[in-house]
Image (cartoon, rainbow, N blue to C red; front, side, top):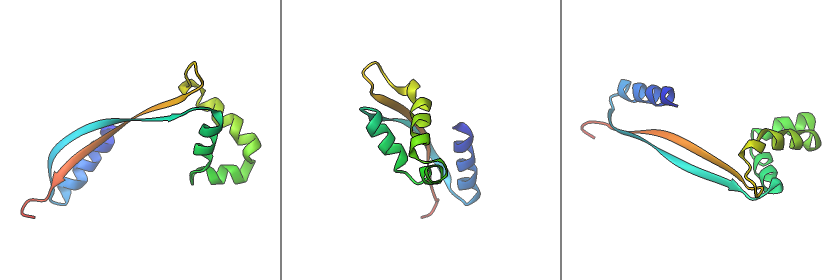
Length: 93
């Protein structure tokens, strides 16, 4: 992620912005069970080509297997996401 922030900082500075801060935040996404996890994942745009190519009957078990390591002993899927960000301002504006 640091590579992205460095890239973002470079682009901002190249267009006249000054970096005034950088930080990160952690967000948590939780899905209570397989059904909700599958519905959430299969409803987003990037899932469409895979669903059209192989169908839900093939894709669903593969997706659930791939995210199984994020499931706790109660069956809840939990994802911790770290987002890096920079704050910049344009001098004189």
